[in-house]
Length: 87
Image (cartoon, rainbow, N blue to C red; front, side):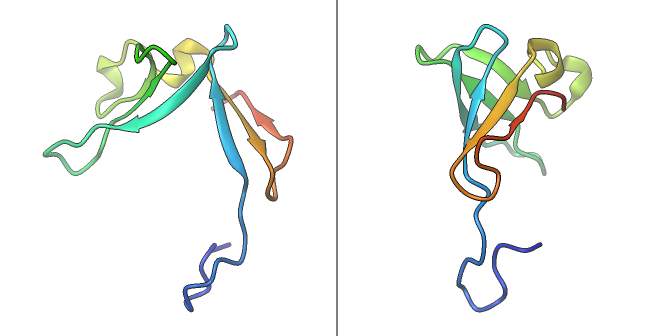
């Protein structure tokens, strides 16, 4: 359901998402502003190297979530301890 019930008060929180690649490196989400209707998302490692992406055009992706074996684990919130590894 919606996190916001219309009165500005949050009624739920899924948790803090931590993304990792198949080698266990923690990845950090960045959104790339563009002039298109969508905003490509990239995931960087601690050194700022692109390790995964959710591209504008999937056919052009080198580091798609599916290709790099990305996983996300939630800490705290309603999904505490849950890991997703299959997009």
